Length: 260
Length: 260
DNA sequence: AGCACTAAATGAATGTCATTCATTTATTAG
DNA sequence: CTAATAAATGAATGACATTCATTTAGTGCT
Image (cartoon, rainbow over all chains, first blue to last red; front, side):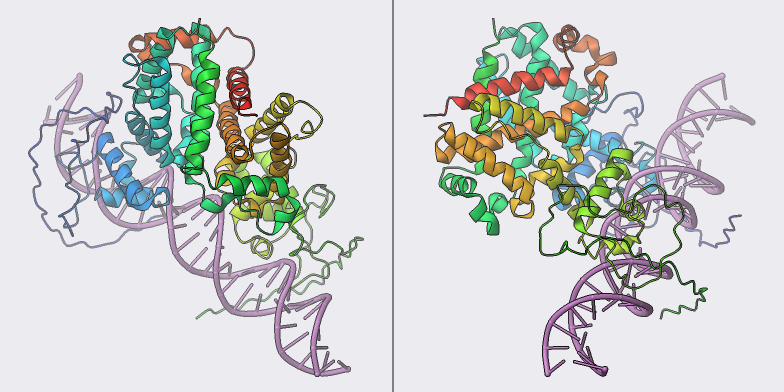
C-alpha cells in the first residue's frame, strides 16, 4: 500500500551557497570534535527559514562536530531530558531523520558528547607536578566536568575506548604519569580504574538534594545515623566536596604506596 | 467527544477466592518487602486465565510487596530493558493502569526494588568484627548486590532516605559501626559517602566488557597505556575485582586513620 | 438499612520518543 | 554518461509511561 497523493506548491528556494570549502571528510576521520568552529548554522538569527526542499543539499548541513556542539548547547539549556533527537534536529534546523545519516543512534550522540567533555578534563599537571598534585587536580577536574553530566556515566562505564579518541588520549597521559611516578606497569590500569570509580560515584553526589539524608519520621529508630547527619551539617563546604576530598586523599596516599 | 459503543459477551468469570487473610495494609506500612511470600499469582500454570471483569475485585490483586517481587523476577529474567509497566502488569496478570493504584510512577517501582536489594547487603559484621573487617565485607557485598543492578544507581544517588526504610536501616547500622570504631561524629557521614561513591562507581566496572581498554587502531599513539593494559591482563582475578580490592584497601587504611 | 466515599480493577486513549522507510536531489567514481 | 553513493525530507511505526472514564466492592456514618 502507501498512497501518497499530495500537491505541494513548487517554490524554487534560495540557492544557499555558503562560502566554505568542503574539506572535512565525514566518515573516515573519527570526530576531531575539539574546536567548535565547524558546522555553522549560526544558531540565532534564522527565525523562520523557508522550508527546505527535499533531497541532498549542495553543502552538507550536518557533521559530527556540529551535532556535538548542538547537543551540548541543548543539554546546557534544557538538561538531558531535553536532549531528544527531535529537539536536536530542530536545533540544527533539520529533519530528525537527517541525523541518522551521521550517527547510528542516540547513544552515538551521547558518545560524541562524552568524548568532547573528556577533552575538557585537566591533565596538564602530569609531567610538570609531583604525582600527588597531578592526580589531585586531574581527579577534581574530572569529577567537576561529569557532575553536570551524570547521565553519561552509565555510557562511559561500558564504552570501549576505541570509540572515544579523546578519552583514550586522557588515559595515555594519565598512564604515563603513573609510570613515571614509579608505579609498576601491571598496577597502572587497576589504579586508574580505582580512581575513576571513585570519581564517577562522587559525581553523582554532587547532584544529590540537600536533604537527602533527612531521616524524617524514622529519626527515632535511627539515632546514631540521625545524630551523625546533624553534626556533619556544621562542617565547612558542600557535603559532596567534603566527602570527595576525604576519599580522594585516602586513595592518593593508599595507592601512592604502590610506587617502587 | 468519546463514543464508546461496544458489546461484550457477559461471561461470569471465576469467583477467584484465594485462601489468604487480608491482613497486610497497603498504604500505611511502608513496604516490608523482605520475605517474598506475599502476592502469589503462582507465576507459571495460569496460561490463559479467563478475562477478569472490570471493577474492584473482592480481594486486592496487588500490593507493594507483590509488585516488588514481580519486578525483581522480571529484571532477573529480562534485564532492566525488560522492566516495563506493561510487562510488570502482565507478570502480575493485571492491566497496566492497575499498577498506578499502588505506585505513582515507574520510578516508584525502582525505589521499591532498590530498597529491597539494600536489605540484602551484608552488615552483619558490624558489631562482631573489627571495623576494617566489617567495612570490607559490607563493601564487597554492597558492590556485588548492585553490580547486577546498575540502572538503579542513578536513582539511589538522588534518593532521599526517607523513602527507603531498609536503606535507612543500613545507614544506621553502618553509622553505629563507624562511631563505635572511634570515628568522630562529624566525619561519619562523609566517610560513608566516600565509601559508597567508590562502591557505586565500582559496580559499573563489573558490567564493563572485557575488551573495554582495547585501544585498537590507536595503539600506536598510546604506547604507555597500551603497554599497561597488556601487562595488567596477566594479573589474577577479574580486572574489576582487582581494582576494587586495591581501592577499597586504600580507603580502609586512609579513612581508618580518622579514628581517634 | 441506606448512602456517600474511597479503593482497586478494566479498557481505551494520549503524547512522547527513537527509529525506519520510501523518495528526492546532488555529488562522485568509473 | 551513467551507476552508485551521500544527505536531505516527510511520513510512518512501534514502544512506552501515564491518564481518564467507568465499573465494581468494601467501609464508615447516621
